[in-house]
Length: 240
Picture 1 (cartoon, rainbow, N blue to C red):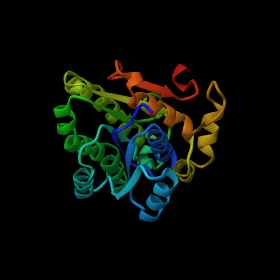
Picture 2 (cartoon, rainbow, N blue to C red; picture 1 turned 120 degrees about the vertical axis):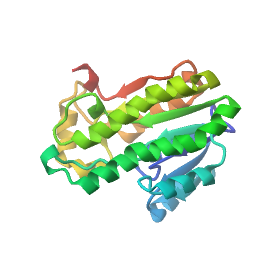
Picture 3 (tube, rainbow, N blue to C red; picture 1 turned 90 degrees about the horizontal axis):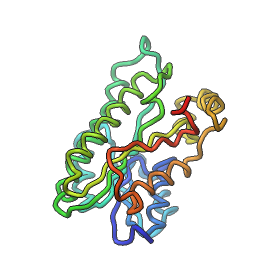
Picture 4 (cartoon, rainbow, N blue to C red; picture 1 turned 60 degrees about the vertical axis):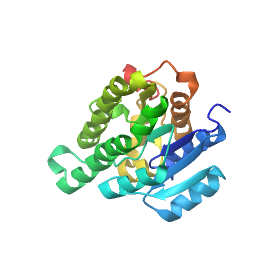
């Protein structure tokens, strides 16, 4: 077990990519802390993961809630910034309140979670941060202007944090999924998600478990000399 005696926090860990990532990290010996807004779903996720998991109810769009998560985490070795808000809207139809919630969740929440937890990681001289972004951060996708902008900001933070934290032994990388089969994506994008999947070189959408394998790899010692990089898990979307 390559993550034995390590602690990981996974935001948005009650479903989809976050839950599958938590399962994998726990299977490799990590103690996982999963966050999410829905306590019932959190309790179900903890039961599914097993004894090495606990849930902290958190709204990543709320600064006080993020600070509470930091305080309840204590020392961590792995941060997976997976929580995301991804409403679909053309620029001319974008609601400002929805836009602000999306950026607060996808960017500000991740930023200040890292800001709160990184001092301990730097002091211990080790750690891994994995930011879950999106193929849409690299390709123009109508209806995803706000979402892609927020995830592009997270991609920029991946590179900046890698430069800031590398000397202390903390690695920072991104996983950029293509269209993925999750309940959240289905609710936000509907049939469009499957259409995007069919347009990929591999001709389909991803399973959340396939994205989670990339999260595990970048969290693990197998990626010990990788930092500031983006692993595209997008069925070839970055190639066309």
